[in-house]
Image (cartoon, rainbow, N blue to C red; front, side):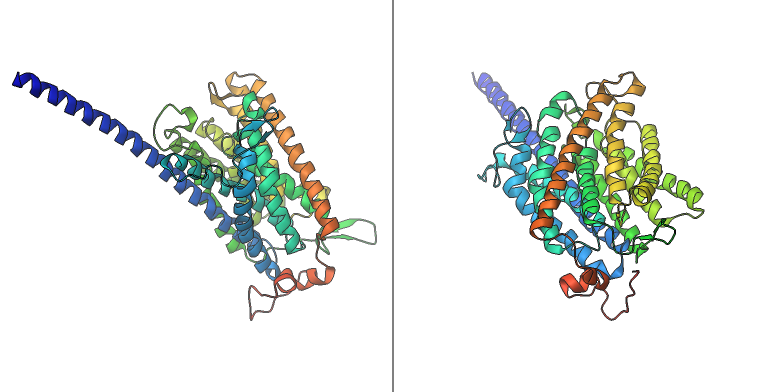
Length: 452
């Protein structure tokens, strides 16, 4: 009898230990996922510093404070409106056939229990993405935009433009249901920001003295060299660093499970494809610009690295390392061609090449999913026997999101122009926005010469 009791006691003890161990493993797995997403969010947040340095370095010294202020406030205002409105539009309950989210406004679940941790970790990761989409526009509209008008724009894109098209893809909307694939945001983030940047720069008009009509009727294009290329280089390296959060943390998980491409197993693969594409983009832009301009152009090379990163953002989880090099290299060449085309053919003044990097290479990277994608059940491209089905879906997504972002940006900028004014006066532009908008100098005590 005692032996039976002892055996039963041991069995119950083992069952208890087993159940405790299982719960502990599940709890540990959840904790690892939270920590990984937090680390990824911090990496993406660091990209704000990268954007600030890139844009400051590639523009004139007299506007350095203004550029920095815009990048800081992109996040600060954007975080508040994304908490209040943007998250609900993007991840709220689906309505109107997958067009929009309709609940979870003002922080969604308000309880502080353990389960709500799922919401908080996801919100923190998504808000830094929203800030990235918004800050892309800053560089394209640099050196001639009223500060107050820019703040209105950045609130609107974070609350409305980015979240609604984001719902279509990442919020379980209609494009997601069709099978559109954008792993980390070539279209959702970069093309949306790129379209807004292009529309804003076009409506705003070029900087004074950028395009000069000569006596023969021909228009010459004047370059406004960036005042601090080391700043720009440091900014690009910070963006490269932060992109490992942008892409690799988009797995959403650190643990190995049945998440497919979203499993923690894919972190290393995504990091490899991201590294190779960025490197290939810089190398291709360097070589191509060297051939074209007869000199290895620094700004083109830096933008080539960013072009490779933007291009690989959508397909990073579904392509091989070899394909990522090809995608990055094509992106590096495309950005040089796009900068020249937008600047000299379209006559749209984009001081840092934001439209070329984020719009053009974002579109290409999204199409790359339908060409080089090779993950069954997720995205199989033309080169791997998938036919043109995935490519067609990717094209539809590009057109749909692009039309939404471009049209809403045009409406927004014209409204701001009519109500508040969009551009500073010629006198203020000549003086520099640091003095005219902020009564502050980025380089106090140094003599700054205007390029106008």
